[in-house]
Picture 1 (cartoon, helix red, strand yellow):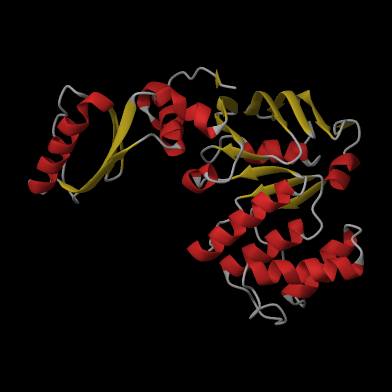
Picture 2 (cartoon, one colour):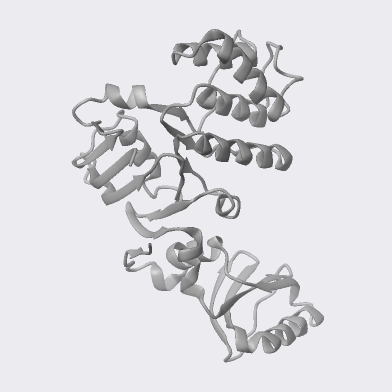
Length: 315
């Protein structure tokens, strides 16, 4: 394993525990997703992997190097896209990408070719040679290119698709996959659960500093075996009436209502949802197999998981 995190705990001086006994491993060629709400402890975990935050206890090995004893190993092993875009004042995007590649030890000719390849694949040509203030999405893409132009053995991407338009998000996910396929271990921090599902090999959901679920997307969704998820979007200023007995637990997020339905009650659920739309209570509805978002909702959002969460690990 390129990344081995064992029993990692970080407690700050004010008594707040940001990470609580976290253990994870990431292999070469793997995209590992790290999901969780704001304040879950993801940023603190990333800081410890990069050697910029010292844990209270536990261990981190990057390519068999002990980061706690040798923080410089993290700087040598990792390339990093931070959550905020990198400042490139006075440089063009191409110059900034090439500069980072050469700083990371890349051959200048190879770096120039790789920079152009990334610019072309992300369709950044119109900005590549301009010294101008970049929009949020373009700045994020340039920062991503700087992280992967000469990727480390471990590549850490913190919310790489923030502010990026849908077309270029798709292109970026393809590049994330290719970075792993070329041999790096990719640690992907994201809130975009649905998009992450199409990219990650394994993932962990973190809440209140602890891993509350981990495994492959397919294995994590297996907890919904035999169940469908009904999603209803309510009309503004309406309330959902009491659900029929065949509808399982429901969770409301704004106007969205998510409900569990067993497969044998599919037709009943369709009729009920249709009646809500005809009564102008529901604006629209859909029903289908569980997604990774449903796992996230069940582990983090649903009220019966707020008071006490048990760690769930699947192979």
